[in-house]
Amino acid sequence: MRARSTLAVLIAATSVASAQPADPYAPAQPADPYGPAPTPPARAPAPTPTPTPTPTPTPTPDLPPTSPGPEDPVLAEQIALDLVMRAQQLFDARVFVDAKQLAVEALVKSPKGAAAEHARFLIKSVNKQLGIADAPDPTQPTPPVDLTPIQQEAQPAVPVLPPQPEVPGAANAKLATRVHGGLYFGLIGATIGSFFSKETPAGGAIPVGIAAGVAGGLYLPRLLAKRSWTEAQIRTAGSGSVWGGVIGGLFADAVKIDSTSARQVLVGASIGSTVGLLGGAGLASRNRLTRGDIALVDTFAGVGAIGGLTMGMLMQPVEGEAYSVNSILGATAGVLVGVIAGPQTNTTPRRMLRVAGLAAAGGAAPFLLYAAIYDRSGHGDERLVGALSSIGLVGGLYLGFRLTSDLDVDLDTQGTPAEDDAPAAVVGRHSDGRWSLGAVAITPLSLELAPQPGLAVPVLGGAF
Image 1: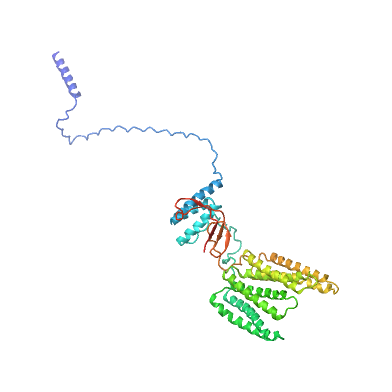
Image 2: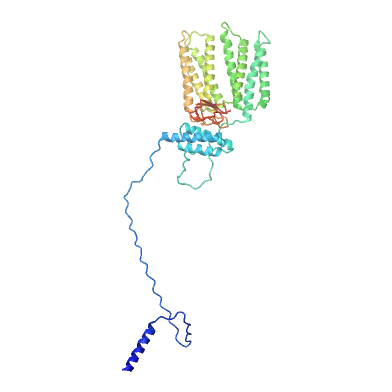
């Protein structure tokens, strides 16, 4: 019994000792070098992450696409006007780059109207201040590209040049000077020579006129070489001299009722030619008319002078002074109409040669009928031929312009393009002397002219 109790106590003590924790401060026990390697403690497996559920997209209702509506032109013009007013203020303050940027924005915002005109003027002014060439207008569409496929073999490209303006050379100008100089000085010489003999004025007028004409044709180009006039300017002065002489000679015949001598006609022609030369030279100094414009003046003046004679055939009985007066009125009206209409039309000497030829043919054709209907007993034949000839002149003139409407298009220029540099105003003057009608523009007052801000409507503006 005592032995069993002792064994039970030992078993219990052994169980209690094995259940107690190890002493952390006890000395480490040496490992057995001949024993098996210690098994490392097993790691706990990492927890598997739970997958995040993907959210289901909520379906959105189908909405119609929004399209920008058309912009109100009145609102666009108002915005462009505000931009251009601010650009003007920056230009006055000499902030050129910002002023140009606002002007371009105003031009894109409203390509037409008063704000656009002012914006274009500001852009040109800024470019002139910055010394750069004018950029293309952003509101103008680009030219279309030719997408036609090439059917034939490739050929070397030949550049197609646009119509070139007439720029006559110095040789043509010298020839015009010789012709008009010979005519004028020949007339003056003939007038002086007619006074050498009272009985035979032609005996002195012919040789002196020929000598003076040759001398004037040879030496006048040298005298005008220093002025550097173009052929158009020389033709302008020469045309004034020619038609002034014609009108002066007819006037001398009209004022003398009884009979007019050749000497009197020469004196009147010389005076008229000199006055016409001075007037033509004054007009030529402004350099506004082209060779085509002078050809138009000569054509209209010639048709007017001849038309005055044919209209005189309707006035029977015949009166020589009436013929002269009619021709004076016709030539004067032709010169005035040609000078006014010339800069507004596209005429060249080649075109006007055809027009004048058709007008002359129309006026001369009825005289072929005169030989068949001539009647000594009455004046009906003269009146009929005069009426038909007058109608033929006008009809030939109209037909000539109609048939040559597409001849020499855009060639009636001075050789240099006109510069549109007039300020924005109702009436503007360009630096080349042309006047034109502009648009009503509202511009802010410059701070250099007025201490307070304000608006102005320019009525008259000019560039010189």
